[in-house]
Image (cartoon, rainbow, N blue to C red; front, side):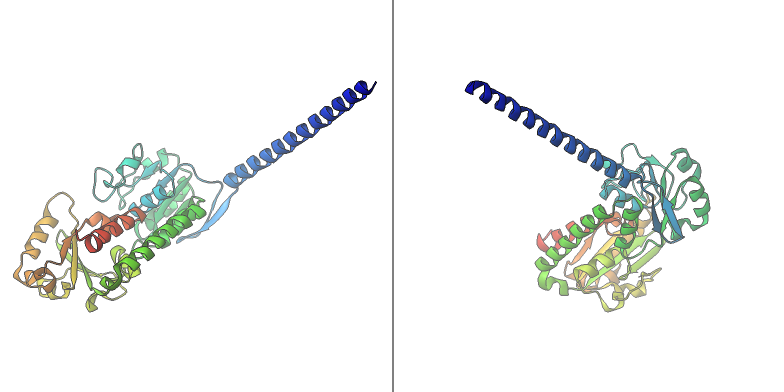
Amino acid sequence: MINFFKHSKLLLFTALLFVVVLSGCGNKAETSKEESTSDKASSTESYTVEHAMESTEIKKTPERVVILTNEGTEALLALGVKPVGAVESWTGDPWYDHIKADMEGVTSVGTEGEPSLETIASLKPDLIIGNKMRHEKIYEQLKSIAPTVFAEDLRGDWKKNFELYAKAVNKEEEGKKVIGDFDNRIADLKSKLGDQLQKEISIVRFMAGDVRIYHKDTFSGVILDQLGFARPESQNVDDFAEKNVTKERIPAMDGDIIFYFSYETGDGEASKLEEEWVNDPLFKNLSAVKEGNIHKVSDEIWNTAGGVRAANLMLDDIEKFFLEGK
């Protein structure tokens, strides 16, 4: 009899335990279902983006994005978004070397200055990202194809546009991390550079038929300023550049260190102009040149690409020249 009661109690305990386990599994399944529903809702809920043209409602997190600027392409890649279509890089065939590995399968939609509306429409995008400075005249046509978001301009602080793009593709948190990582790298590099930041950095660019002295409101100028580098007095101004300079302005190119780059499109004209100027007696007489403190760097990295990847590669260059002595 005692064994019978013991056996009965054991059966009852086992049954109760089974019920509890089933209840727990049910709750877990319900929680998992709720989380899945929540995740799905977050990707399908509409959101509004205010931009250079107006406020645009985006119905859900976009999956087919067309990007119409070079720096915007870099932003999307940094956010983990591979565009279905992008404008060709200013130099490259058709992409810059530093992004081409990640652009395989992306359709060219023309150039930044002349994107193809027909090609863009054929890609059936659910978001188009462009720029008022470049594309204001075709905004209405673009937004008839898909929701369209425009940044204001393409000069100076690249982070402003990056933050807009992150919001447009519903990846603001990822965007904050990208910017945070860059800013942390800047802070670390500043501490390592120390007194070298007192050196005045001059920036010069050669283009076919045009020589420019770059000021602070440029891609490289903003990064140098964030690092805390000094600039020659004539370049330490918050505007874009002195364009079409003549050789009489060569003395204004001097500094403790000169970085220069050439926008070569393949016809050799920019390279020819560069060679003429750097071999001019006035240029050779600059103190930075005489002391060997002059460096040719990549135009796409220090200026043309204009995005977060180029910004990090520019920091790589700074590290090499100032910390590694290369």
